[in-house]
Amino acid sequence: MATAREIMTSGTECVGEKESVLDAARKMTDLGVGALPICGADNRLKGMLTDRDIVTKVLGTGKDPADCPAGELAQGEAVTIGADDPAEEILRTMTAHKVRRLPVIDGHTLVGMVATADVARSLPDPQVGDLLEAISA
Image (cartoon, rainbow, N blue to C red):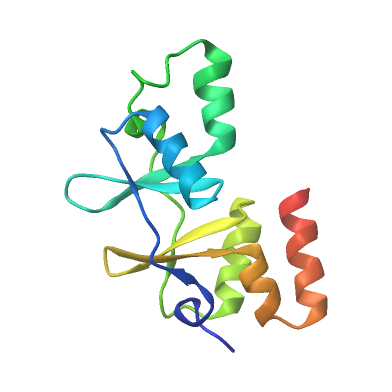
C-alpha cells in the first residue's frame, strides 16, 4: 500500500504564526488552496488555518484580519501524518479526527499535504466510501 510520501502534494507552503490572517488569505488565494499549515519561527508546525477558520473565527467575530496573527488560530497540536505512514493510517487518522487534509511531516519537518482526494486515489473503492462517510458525518 502507498505511503503518505508517495501520495502527498509536496512543496506545501506555510503561513508564519506572526503573519496576519489577511496575508494568509492572500496566500491561499494565490495558491488556490483552502488551508495552510501555520509554522513557527523554528519552522515547526503549530497548527492549520482554513478558509472556514478565517470566516468563523475572524470575520464572523468582528476581528480585523490585518491585525490578527495566524498563530492566534492555531489550536493545540495539529493532527499530522508521518511521511512513511501507510494509506491505511492516513485513513484512520482522517476518520478519527474528521479532517480532510493532513500535513505530512518527516521528523519535525513539513514535507507536504495529503488530502482526501489523494487518499481516495490510492485506496480500494470500499475504503474510499468509508472515509468519505466518516469525515462527512
